[in-house]
Figure (tube, rainbow, N blue to C red):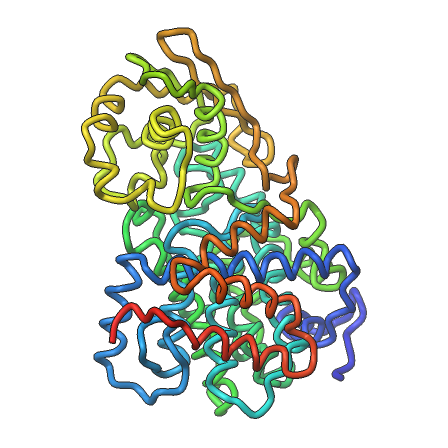
Length: 469
């Protein structure tokens, strides 16, 4: 195990973070449970996402590339190069906007899950489930720490009204922090030395991207898939001897200065990696429905106003100032996942939201379109836009009222193990029979045992219902 630099040492920050990640402390029972829940929840979202039209398009594209068949694309009956498999798997994990959410917000699971699954399949010689979870853990921790270290820049952007909350310069967070977390996770899985890991981070820094203007389109989910692919490629290139800056978190014009700004707090990144604090402070919120995080609260409020008898004639929604979620007439299902109006309408009309609630068929039905025309959204600056403190209020012309400040799975209202199991089974059944989905769930819990990861990977490739032959 590499020697870990002490806090306040003269070791460059990027290299210090690499050392700390390779010497990750043992997980507390609380953190260990959170990591397992994140892995299981992300895997469920991935399996459900394999049927999404974005993933279908990517799978067809990647298959035609004709790459060496080393890593499978689940359900599509072909294998490809690990970086291309990571691209598809990472995108699938985020395609339904169903993966967990951290604070400050980013989608930290899909970039590392897609990259690690692709790499684990690619080399069958050393499938160590413990190392897999360690790589997964550090990749997530780095992403959350990078977001925390840039909070001052986020607040400055919001104050000046340049961008919606949680952004700087219009970048979508998983497109910027995702490649870094993915590269770190891939480096640990491949057994790179700390200096090689720092090189991988330097390579990934030049590939960070993701424009928030693409939210509500098919491209948005590919920000996470691209991050997964970048991590795999960066680690593999570093392993071969590619050179890059080993100081991207502290040098001028490095990742931190470009994406975090002058106020970026690099010391916070090292502190987080020492403590693995993100898994308990405050932990992660697990989504109940396949939509944007703020929509979880909006749906919860709408369901409280549902009476099952008849649709209202008029609806008013009071919500925080999320201008990018003011989408009165969504173009398609992807757009609808970010629409306050649509998600409230579905809750009021159907009394439930599921994996098919954002289909083109449901969106185009007359009852939805009629209620959308009769819905008014008020973006209220007095309601905090923070996901852990916001609320949404729904009122109708016939006197119904619904208000919510969270959902089952929110930081305030944690999901139970039964909730996690039900969600995983529902997601996995999109790709495989119910009994196979339940069996796969049990394999997740045994990933660190002898042959546990090997058995899980075999289960993932044994789908009885391939999507394309």
